[in-house]
Length: 413
Ligand SMILES: Nc1ncnc2c1ncn2[C@@H]1O[C@H](COP(=O)(O)OP(=O)(O)OP(=O)(O)O)[C@@H](O)[C@H]1O
Image 1: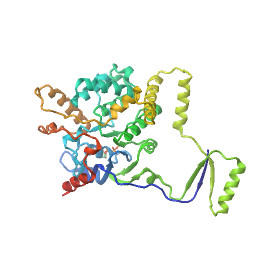
Image 2: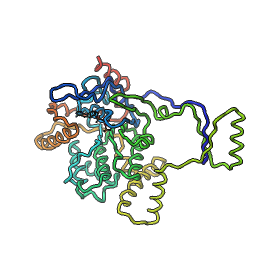
Image 3: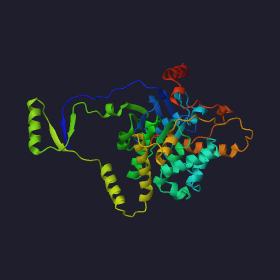
Image 4: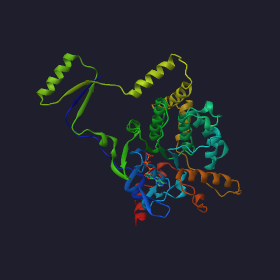
């Protein structure tokens, strides 16, 4: 391919109005020291919105406030000031939690549980009945390529395998909003591609993804819009096209031209008054080259300890994508992803339970997990507010943008 770069026009990106699923207004978090004096302003008066059905990238260097923002969106940290609403409700509202899946930056998995037990544990926290839980666990283990190693303790897993089980854990409740903090850390390029494909597939089925990553090429590949933070503030935000558009260049790509044709083309452009024309041979991305080489080696039957798992995930995601391009509906992979991503009514988290006692150990364990995530002491349980079912996540039942706005207006006073 030949690429031709010339000076000219601005981005063609357009923005349309969408329903806001996360809204942060004047959001601030100041961490205090032991004597309650202000120590660190981690997030400083930011406005942010994430729209339903988009992949939103939250970027920034270490310590810029991304994780703190995410924890406030999750209701794990109290804002010092400002407002954060999720699904049109305050972030600490327990009922919104059922529709959120979260992959934390660090794994908070139990080393001595195996993959299946881990998903069992998280499925139970959502009070899923046994049959539904088992089905989902089977589908998720297959999807993240860990079904063959599901009985091994997680402590024995490699970093990438732990990321995979973390992702499965985040999806166990079929969330409408998926918050992924550095999802591709530790993954090989195949696993990274799989996660990116999965994110895109989930977006295509109507899920919203908030993605936090330092790997800019990953973010660039999958996000619709992004915000770049520094020092607790959002420095820039917009669509990827808007953010990356080079205002003073146009790129034209075409099949490779002969040197004679290239000269004619450049001469024609110069005759039109276009200056500084650059002609260069297109390069493929290192990721495509890597994947080509690996796939070729797999096709040749070259043996390697890790290839089995990676190949399986790729096949699953490929079949799912083919199905979306009008493949027969009944392939196994299509069914798996379909069921995982289908919009199903959300079950009440705690339908009045005739035997409430057995929930207690899980609750205690959940508090452990929460306190691990936040680094703060767990809150006292909010009495019985959990019992209210969330409206089904299908868009007709979701609060409208107007409703979102009015809640926010109410909250803002
Ligand atoms: N529990 C805490 N107590 C005190 N300071 C904190 C706490 N959590 C975060 N901070 C501080 O807040 C700032 C922002 O941290 P945060 O973890 O949000 O950054 P980040 O953008 O997610 O960074 P990274 O990319 O390294 O994960 C940092 O200066 C950090 O030290």
